[in-house]
Length: 249
Image (cartoon, rainbow, N blue to C red):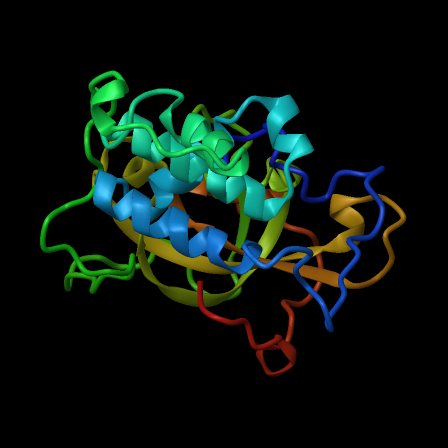
């Protein structure tokens, strides 16, 4: 997610609870297939998973807020198809409208020649997932128990750093593997694997008055800065035996 975009809603007040109907999570029969369609279209167009998310993030703010989640995935699929040179601009919408109006489809030749406007971001032969094996000299920078500060540098493009954590201080509670940095992977397919850490924050440090509970977030190493010992709060370190189990990134 690009920091401060319409999609970066984590931790922001005023949106209320998210309604979830466990018995009927979808409101239309096509919705469960939206992500599969977006993922398949992106792969054909040469768009990796991080770049696909960035495509969605670049939807106009009004459109992003108006659409539900399946609708956004469909919009992202269309954008991948257009930018990847699979279909012409407006072709998907025209075909959908003709189908809705029970009109016969137009021949492909009636549409403008598709033009590839975005270079592929996939790497031929790369694993189908973003986890990588570190080399012997790829040593984690931060040990468990180390206090770190989240960078507050604004980021253009895709990132997995939520705005509500920028500039906050927390503690490393687990090491969650060696993964491709989404920021560079989304931009041009560059593979820059790095360590991912589970960082524990006091909720009250994120939202004053939030209470005594804690929040854990998986963050990539480039998002983190060491906290000088002089800035660390007084008191004994937390007991490793009481640290929560944190799922992998």
